Length: 482
Image 1 (cartoon, rainbow, N blue to C red):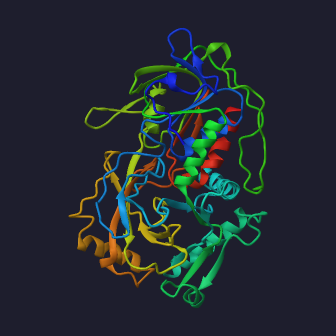
Image 2: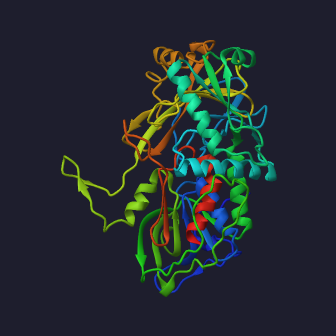
Image 3: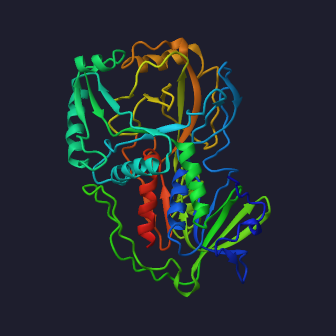
């Protein structure tokens, strides 16, 4: 599949009604989506599929789901090509290598069931809806995925009380559906655990049968193709420098609800009938830089799905909001994300389990703990840890610290709480990712922020379970606009 690079907007194929504008705009578009991570791709595909109006997805990097990363270089006999690959902003992941012996399956991520977060939160509602949509989408289009199940393992009485409460909550939220007719969770005793997974240690485990893994690279490639099949456009190496509202107020009169009913998880359609075109010639003037130079586009609607940069896009349209000052006198922007770096660890020994294994999460849900996931080839990986950083481009992995024997020994002790058989000498630092968090260190749970500011929809803090929720987020954004 050919990629559209932003050498010139004139190179955009003519299947859409994206057209040169009068006045001082190079082009006009009905839907402008900023950020081509999996969430942005899903939104652009959804809007383009409507068939009414033009859709343009722009991305500052050279390909979808990609950021520049630096990782620990390693050499393994089964691997021959080093490459970079990102799963998605906001939780951007770098893959080290691609196998020559078999199709790469390291680019897999978790399809969550929606267990952990508050019942009325967007994270819960969109994850539950998105999980079912993701499985259906992958089955329909033959995207590699697997419903592998997850265990949340408790080590003490406090953990067991948490798991019992979590199970009761799951049974209230995750009702049987055609795809998932069985109970959403059930408990295993220590003896039952050992019979199924002899290497896993714990007093009891909560089983989530709906949890799975998906080939994210394949998912993103398909969404990219579908956007163009629907007549939408994608332009890479195109970075937004400024956005301003133009014209009068919009005449939006949204009909129908944007609520997500998790009690009804079968497919539902509540499309509104209004046009995305603003009244009175209003809209947004979007300035951007590309290899072809500075460009200006007039957009009727804007969707900010810029991941790690979503707060910056938000602040471009928030100049009238009150700013505060830091203790050093510098101005604090209206909205500021916290950058949470996480390291993932590979394992050079054989895989010891056939399921995903999670510890009980911390009470603030800032982290789900250093857990064990599998890729589609069955290889184990562990992570992430939690390290708040000041720079969103700090993906460096210091081999003298994170990769040192003492550091790996420390990590192994955390993992050995539920998997005692792992060997510290078989662990290695694989890659690092950065999550865009609305909650800072020590702060309590923060939900996804999805706000409609009169024609521009901001998505900020879309971390986990953003991948699982991506198709549901796209559906939700469409309902906001229509």
